[in-house]
Image 1: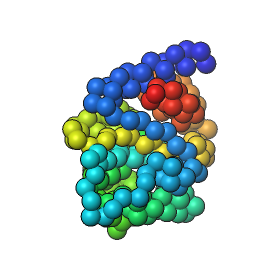
Image 2: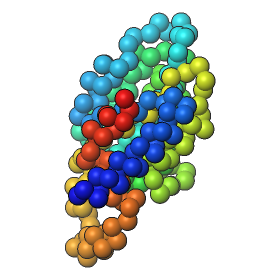
Image 3: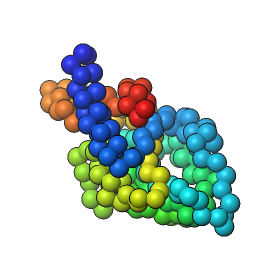
Length: 205
């Protein structure tokens, strides 16, 4: 466990340093607290007024290989609906995924584009054109490539611990044994990030 902690901390420090180069904020929130997070972090804006520091927000959602449950979908959609009511269209958001499959599900759009956002959430996997090995690393690369000097850039990691159980439920005993034997560092990293959000909270400060 100690070795795992050292590995995770080292990886997250590296990602955090990369984010600091371009002044990128990182947040970690459980899916169950997603709506409260929106309330606490995003104030109402005048729809007609361009703010001095608009926001480019990358939402990195933890997913299983199976579909998002109806309950989780309701939380996500309500959260993004609330966000659309608080942020004006001078801001932009995007949706990426990690854990079960990794990729860019939706490029930057205005918060008011709810039809596009809902369509993406309803079929995240099919919305991804190219799959990657590491969704967390991809998120930092993506936000750096789309960095806007005068905007506040951030990555919001939306954790869903239930995804671990969902993936294990559809695996056979043989497949689980294979996964245990492999113990690839990237797989360990994905699981550890979902279980140790407090590390991200420390690093972002």
